[in-house]
Length: 102
Image 1 (cartoon, rainbow, N blue to C red):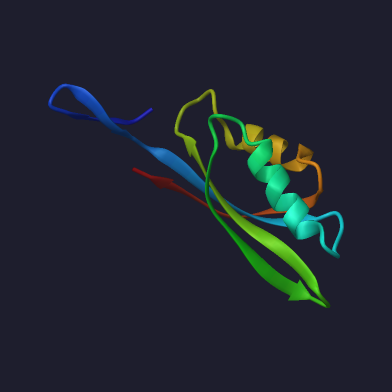
Image 2 (cartoon, one colour):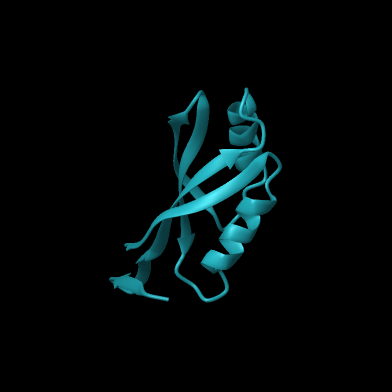
């Protein structure tokens, strides 16, 4: 884990930012249900940075969700994806982007 020290105290740790496209199980009206379930079931080590709706086709809407997790071996992207797949209302997830942030 990378840590920046300022005057002898911990000021900032690096994070991993991961963006996913998430498809709801119910294409009609399932997007609000999905948003609520994502925020309710979020583990303590996950921060939801942003949620946007993305129209796909024929009225289908997906969520573009950006999540931040600590850059620490005990918090992995596979654990993050396992949580996402098991959220009630999620049909499918697609990884869009993964990057590091300070």
